[in-house]
Length: 355
Image (cartoon, rainbow, N blue to C red; front, side, top):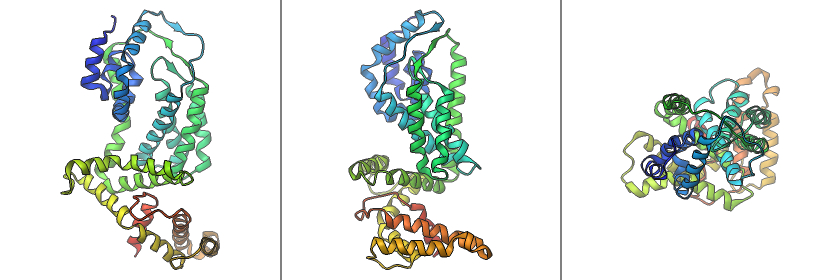
């Protein structure tokens, strides 16, 4: 049955961010992507207004084709590549929030999540990519930054490049029953949102701490490009600022938003105190030069390295991690007060608790 353009526009207007129009057109991968990202943050949904006629024509052509595979290689798309990178990072962040407590998470869980995000974008429309090579690139990249949230970026980059290299057209297949398609989409949606919902509802503070640490690690990558770093930071804070604009100063009604407000205001108000704590850990005073910080760091690392303190391993490990966190804070470019950086929020929580 041919797909109608008018029906597609109606579904786009009524349930576009949930991917209803893509479900109607048989674009299940695109529908799932929109379900998990709310229409690409709303921007992708609005941009599709001009693309719907081509989507309908593509769906009708696919219905008229017999089972088989289309020859040739799809053209390289920078938009698709950028989307693969963004969704890969998004899936990695969600996995970090939901599953980082698991053993071998950075070797298995993180590259698998990022790779699946990249593959989901690669499968949008009439294209797809090679699953084995894409996931292989993700798994081979993950040990490089083992144990660090920043690993999300290189894993997503490697998987996206590989997916683009092995891009191809989908093979034409027969139509499936709507119930089967909905069942498959429902399972995929629950697999993504279930663990995340549990983490947010049952452990809100820890979840926000994970988010802050991960965003801080990602933003620190752009310290050499201050404008880009500030732009990304503003994007990360956009949901909070939008909510504040809508509700004003009285505060949030839900406990989750209250936790977010506390976290945001903590970062805003105690940027200077975080640096004071870092100086205290290293035994330095304010105004110390970078050379002195670097020299003091190496002295303390030698003193408190766990291998040199076998008689007090647990205490040495704690001091060793504190010293590394403090050095990371003081070695980064100092931001103006109130800039709202997320970097090393967890260090602040940790030291305040110890004090």
